[in-house]
Image (cartoon, rainbow, N blue to C red; front, top):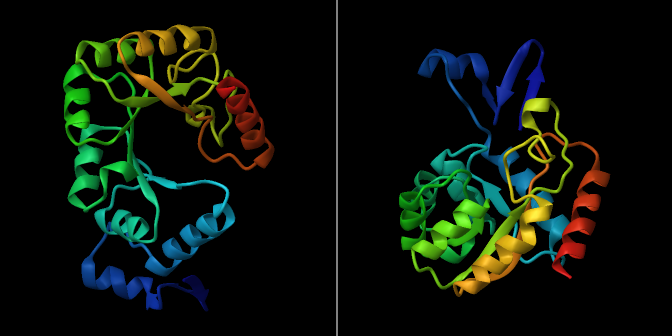
Amino acid sequence: MIVVRGCSLYIGGLKASSIAEEFGTPLYVYDEDTVARRAEEVLSSTRGVVSQVLYSLKANPNPYIAHTLYSMGLGLEAVSPGEVILAVRLGADPSRIMFTGSSVSLEDLEIVLGYGVEVNVDSASAARKLCRLGYRGAVGVRVNPRFGAGYHRYTVTGGRRVKFGVAMDELRGVVEELRSCGIAVKRLHAHMGSGISDPGMYLELLKLLVRLAR
C-alpha cells in the first residue's frame, strides 16, 4: 500500500526516503500488493463474462510485475517481438500471449509466429505479409472504430486521423484476403486510447464489435 504518514511517503510499509538513501535516485519503486489488488479487481469484475484478461506489456514490461500478473491468471499482450520473447522467457503459455503490432515487418511476423502466440492483424499490409509467409492458422483483426478517447490527444488511438487498425471500409477486404490464403479470422480487436474514464465509451465499442462480428 502507498500511504502518507505525517510528511513522509511509505511504499509497501517502507519509508520512501529510506529506500532512496539505500538504492539512490532516480529509482522506480512498485508495491506488489497494490498491483495484485488492482489486478484482482479486474479479474473479479470480469469473471464469468470474459474468457481471458490480458496485461499489456507496453504499460510496464518489468519482468517481476509481468510474472506476478501472469501468475494471477492474466494473459500478456505484446506489441513487439521483444515483448513476445520476454513473455515466453517468463514461462507464459503461447496461448496466453497475444501479439498486436503496428507497422510490422516480415521478420517481426516470422519471429512472433515462431513462438506460436496469438496474432492480431493491424493493417492490410500485415495481412498480405502473413499470406506471403504461408501462414495457415487463425488470427484476429484490429479494427479502427472511427472514434477514440484518452486523457490527452496524443493517447487517442481510434479515429480517422490515427494509423492504428484496419479502417472500417477496408475490413471486409482484409478479412476476405486472409481467408483466400487459408487464414481464419476468429477475433476482432480494437483500441480507443489510454486513460479513458467514461465507461460508456467501452460500451459503445463493444456494441460496434458485436455488430461487426455478426
